[in-house]
Image (cartoon, rainbow, N blue to C red; front, side):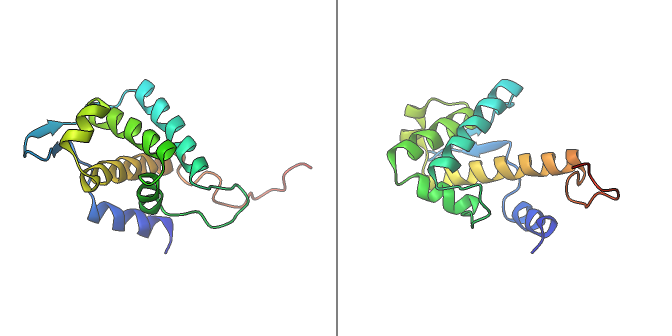
Amino acid sequence: MDITEAKKELEGIMPNAKTIKDLSGNDITLPIITLGKELKIVKLFFDLIELGGYKDDGSDMPGLSELFLQGFRKDKENNLLMEIVSIVIGKPQEWLLDNTDISLLIGVLLPFFVTRINQLTGALGGIGTQKPTTPLPS
């Protein structure tokens, strides 16, 4: 499956949410993610995938959902996930513990990251995915 097909499949499963419902059924409007929040989330995400065993050597990388689910099993990864979700939802981590469950958290995280991947690949427009027509200097 190529990246375009994977993106379409994920979009069909989990559209980008603007509001969510907590466990009591109350609507929570997700805040706008500013550049400052986005940069913090990206740093936390890279910390998470590094702790999750990512190696920049071409070996297999776990999928996002597997990475998130594994992250809830270990304290350091758990804290990173909770911090990311706290930023995305706009609520303190203590609130998350009392008002959400794992399915809600994953339902927020995956669409958030899928949207960012779509934006990034769209902005790059395939840069780096095609072979150069002229040889690069050595």
